[in-house]
Length: 122
Image (cartoon, rainbow, N blue to C red; front, top):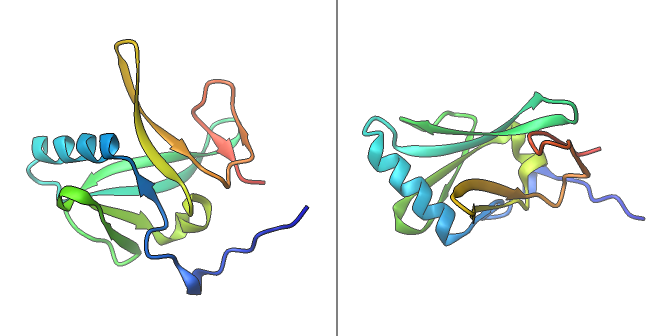
């Protein structure tokens, strides 16, 4: 088994990938909220496993954000404090029956809680 170290000095150009369906979802959400200019991805400590993803519509770039421009001009801001946890994540919008939800495919997540709200990276 090998351990992959995260080096914040070598941040990839696109640390997070976003599927076309998720981009379309973000674009529609931004159009609904005229004060929002971008979507911010971060994580916070929560749940029984450790962390949960946080998606916010925000009016401006925070000095701690990494900017990633998606298709259709959608701006994704990634909190630099969360980057080591979300690096390599794919965000998708999935439809199951009549329900739609964002799904995060994170190669750094090692465990998920039973309800799917939180994850761990240890």
